[in-house]
Length: 256
Image (cartoon, rainbow, N blue to C red; front, side, top):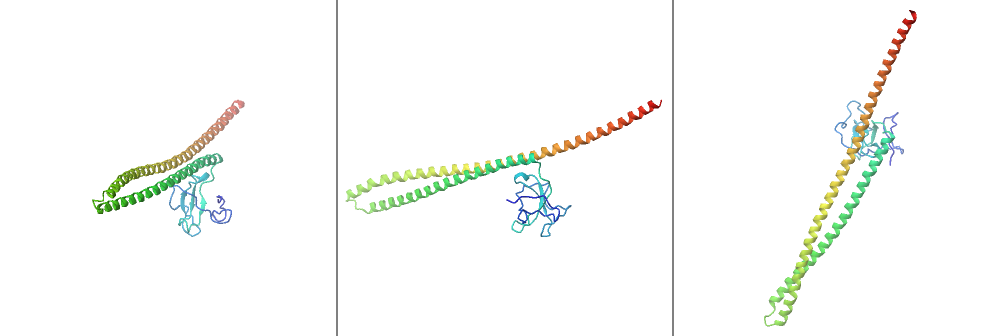
């Protein structure tokens, strides 16, 4: 995997350790940060205005960057990162969340593969039963046609045919019941696959919400910290002013 670098002192373009442009990571839609950056007007290597994106991949999830706006086949990759790398504690949290997300993805893929294999096997069995059923129906029709052509005086042969027909009818009824049960199982499996897909989507949404909630909390803490620093600075100024006033009063008292 290419390592992302924030070093862009000379050209402003991001390159991997092999010297090739960094592939654009997975992104998430953000209506507040998309399209072309009209203010910066950063160009990609094609000379086209770079587009703004929000990363949704690994420990860089939530970081904003600008990249080539062409399709994947022609893209020259990431132009530059806008946000600095996240603090180490935030990277650790994102790493753990991302591992959980990937584990859920793998588990869902395995479940889908298992259910797909089961559906395939059941479908094959259903097709074989259908072929057997059709062959039996054909045999029964042939027997009935043959029975109709047998002279009535040949009671022995007619009796044999009458003995064969009921078991065949019973087999046909049993096969119809089996086919009905197979159809019901296929419908149930389809419902389970749909439920798994819904769970996968819900898990992805939960992880996205957790990540963005963490980022919002970080932004709130940063704002509160800046306000506290401003308040401390004001208190220091007021303290210095009071000290100067006390010194002036002391000087006046000393003169008297």
